[in-house]
Amino acid sequence: MHSDNLFADDDLMFSGDEPEDSLSRDIDPWHVLIVDDEPDVHSMTRMVLGDFEFEGRPLEFTSAYSGEESIDLLKNNAGYAVVLLDVVMETNTAGLDVAHRIRNELNNQFIRVILRTGQPGFAPEHKVITELDINDYWQKAELTSRRLTTSMTTALRSYRDLRKIELNRESLAQMAKSVAHQIRNRTMTINGFAGLASRKLKDDSEILQYLETIASETARLEEIVKSVTTFASIGNCEHCISDISSVAEKAVDLCREYAQEIGRDVLFDLALSEQKIDARPDLLEKVIVELVSNAVFFAAEQQPRVFVSTKTEGQVCTLQVRDNGTCINDADLPYIFDPFFTTRPEAVGMGLSIVNRIVSGYNWTVDVSCSDEGGAVFSVVIPL
Image 1: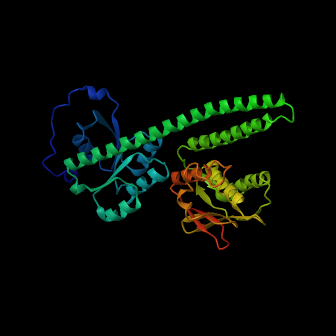
Image 2: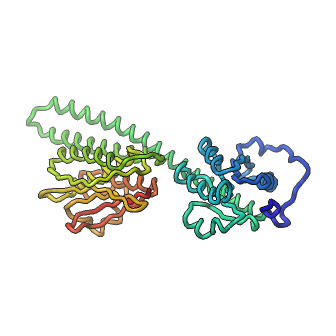
Image 3: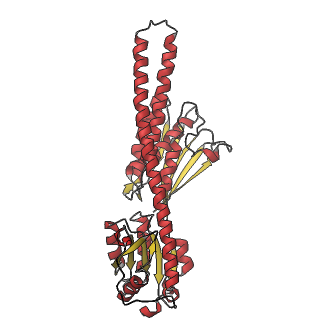
């Protein structure tokens, strides 16, 4: 493949003069990574996009000549906005492997991936777009300077919007933590003065019941604050190796204590198999604790039982939690993962929202159904 086929139209114009310095060169540039094993492709790309600007910001290029080199660069710098990625380099699918590792190993959901190939037979367009999270696909023979400029503009606009959304999410999370901290301080003060007042009253005083109500409601408010803080504290779902069986055993032990606290003699039936999955142990534990504690509460009044199992089939591990109580009403089913939705007057209603937040962060899926016994079944499907 020759570099003169890379940009084949009349829009490609070169100037022998060096570009004049401008104020835009002092502005923080958009960082672009060129990944290709042919040096001519790097040179041509820099020439075509050398004067390109988006929102008054120029491009700054970094070159990598193999897939492994690009991964090393991306590991050390998460600030790249766009990667122009060749398919065939040290192997026939090196670029596809890089695209997969960017999303699933480096957990970088922001960088925009533009795939370029001179040998489309190794990367059929439909298959690549269907199976990989890429943002554009071009055959080098068809990629004109105008198309490359348009593709770069679209990619940068998408990257900009994703970063704004993430910054807004982080700001909201920080605000939620700050508000929760302020509320917790006030509830502690209210509860403290209610306790002092109750100790100054006689045991037969009618006011004591009002103070007890104040104390119980402040405790409930503290639980709400705690749940909101937990939800807001869930940041990026980083990649980490966890053994689902050992994490599940620890989570179930915590739920045994919860069952004792609420006076339920629950029989836990475990069928756990060892399996390494991609998840932070603390986040995986949180998912299991919320699902199992929910099952503990809704299990049958007589002889309550909770079943927790893990099963691996092919490239999928399924975590299943079910109880022998009553299944979820069809009318409630669409709302069970919504924040603060609950059918329990004393509950906060954030548990399943936390589960959904973590499951979504790892691109897992969670399914809800009814068991043969009539209880609810939560199945978390985890790709390996």
